[in-house]
Image: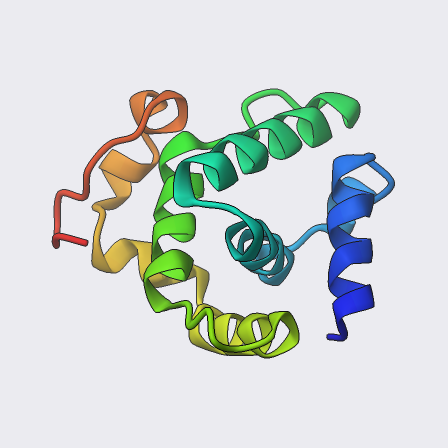
Amino acid sequence: MTDAEILTLVDRLERCLLGKEEFHHRDHVTVAVAYLYAADLETSMDRMRSSLKRFAAHHGVTGLYHETLTRFWLLQVEKSMDRMLCLEESVRKARETFNDKNLVFQYYSRARIESREAKETWLVPDVREL
């Protein structure tokens, strides 16, 4: 993806111009890189939370936002980022590194990650430390 394509994706998410079926795992990773590229972890987390909740509300989907998954993926991306790389290269690397959504199960049991508590608040992993 080019810088323009990355920023367009972020803009389309934030303005709810994507259909709910148009926003996939790789897009979450892309937006995470863009947010982290521009700000620290907590600011990026706040922005991601706000964007995802607005997107879900726009599409009338309740229970879509998941706090633990959102923070888990932001932490994974943040820890692997090389800020010496340009945005395009950072996105390419993150999309390759985190293309498997099931990575989360190396850290969380299915019961813990699927719990209501995990959706509403940040829970630390119960299988393996981050």
